[in-house]
Length: 124
Image 1 (tube, rainbow, N blue to C red):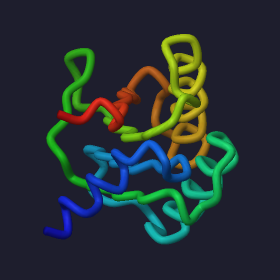
Image 2 (cartoon, rainbow, N blue to C red):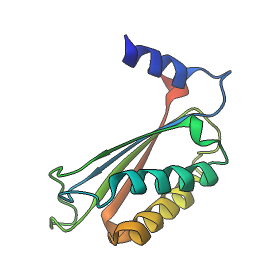
Image 3 (cartoon, rainbow, N blue to C red):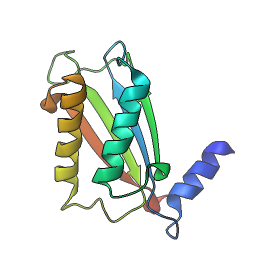
Image 4 (cartoon, rainbow, N blue to C red):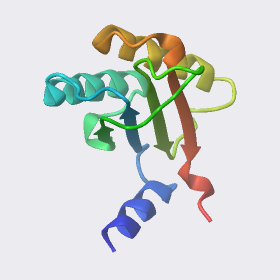
C-alpha cells in the first residue's frame, strides 16, 4: 500500500515536480553516507530547481556492477520524475552533471556512471 501511495504521488500531474532517485554502486560503502545523501539532495534540488522536500533518495552499496568489462567503481542511477525538466534535449546534460557530481564526491570515473530517466507520468 505504501509503495502504491508513493507511485500515485509521483504519477500525479497536478503535484509539484517530484523526484525519486535510486543510486546503486559497487563500492563496499559510501563514506559518511548521511553527508553524501545530504550533499546529493542539495545538488539535485538545485539542478532540478525544486525544494529538497520533493526529493526521495536511496543509496545501495555493494551491488555487483560491471561496466566496460571491469568491476572498477561504478554507479547506476535511476531518476524517476514527473516533470518536463527532463526531456530528450536536457537529459544528456543532466546525466553529465550528475556524473560529474558523483566524480567530485566519490572519485568515481564519469564514464562509469550510468544515469537513466523514468517519466512517471507515463505510468501504466
